[in-house]
Image 1 (spheres, helix red, strand yellow):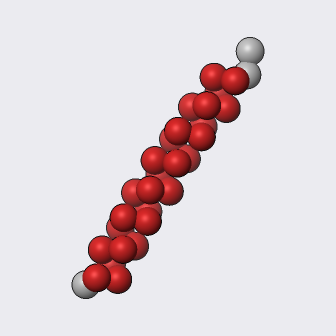
Image 2 (cartoon, one colour):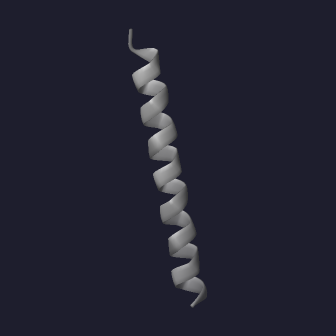
Image 3 (cartoon, rainbow, N blue to C red):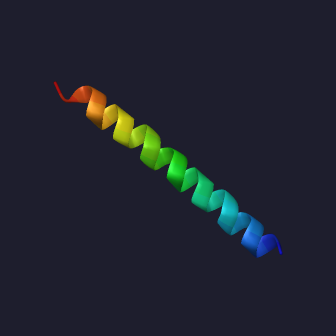
Length: 30
């Protein structure tokens, strides 16, 4: 159960990082 919980948190963090990173890259481009 703890393993799946960690996996869920890791997946959520990756998704947030991807969204933030994509937004920054899109904003940096003129």
